[in-house]
Length: 490
Image: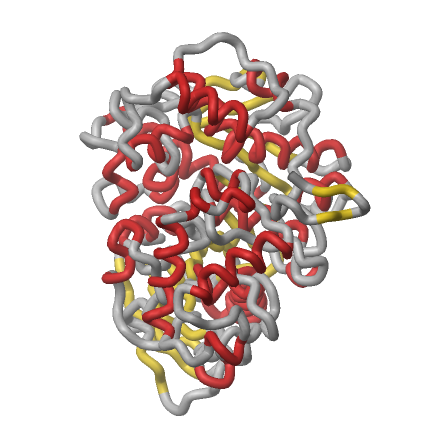
């Protein structure tokens, strides 16, 4: 057993695989009762020694992937977990933000175990933050982006406490994938997060950020499922574990809400809101203005991002010409794609709009403002079914190849899978240690690391898509029909 003192009191962790491991340390007060829908509040101190042996209970989850039935019960949703090679050390720190479409997500999933990554000589931190209505719905009387504010509070906890756990608070790398990658991008644009991390890895960044009008309209629809208004006074009357079902009901019929535009087509009910305060502007605009210039960045994506979503929706092998044409009209209006078969066109357009081009443009915005960015693409296809799909990089980076839902896309754990995983872990930890992931920064030559059976450092490989989207600007998604600056958004 290992004991250390942190904000709130003394915690007792355990020794595992030559690591000191602490689970379920609160970094903020439970956001329930008087703190429901509030910004995260300071943690209450405890007497004696608190056991830090089990993951804290997750925030309320949607029913996606059966997540509503996972994890322990309780209201201490805001907790951190730490894997440290040496609590007396002065090691680089890697803070993970999980994905889950801003709707589900918890740090206690087996795919996020930090032991393999920490064995590379870094302190690994994971944490829970509010998701769904609790974290991202725009509720009257509550701050916007409460899930992002939780992330800031977790990073402040790292700043204040990580030295006691063997980490260097001046060498913090925040990394995340999917909604976690979008969160990393948002943190780069948030004044409240400035100075809390020094390097960032944004993987498969979604281009979905909401206008206040769109977020408020979706929140109203969620509250209406309960016969309530989207206010703190009304929604505080609903038990936390019951609230996600309202979001599930809205998600199931989102395509009926045509005024929600692209968000409705992709059934995305929650995303960071560009509210002008917590999140003053989109990450792309913020980085173009130089807000992240002093933060070293890695940004990248997988080659076949849409493939996983197509698998989940039963579309593989069955995309019709009409579906492909609709995707082109909705997600890439006015952009000229070359002739493709319907399924390829559908997958490329959706991959480009949702993940690939937002990730690339984040790096390009950073470079345009004089910052440094490294770009990568995961082209490795462990199975013919999933190919290099969305999420394939998560088990590869963590090295957890045989556990959790994320590992299902890997299939058999072959020597090739193990080798790609080792190289990605070395790149991520190398970047955290000294800012060098093992390949040159992105510049005029568009140098990119392609992870595959045989890695390659080459010009950005998705050149056709890059050229199609090169003049696109990533703005927040509007509520159609809203008048802004004398112009109706449709």
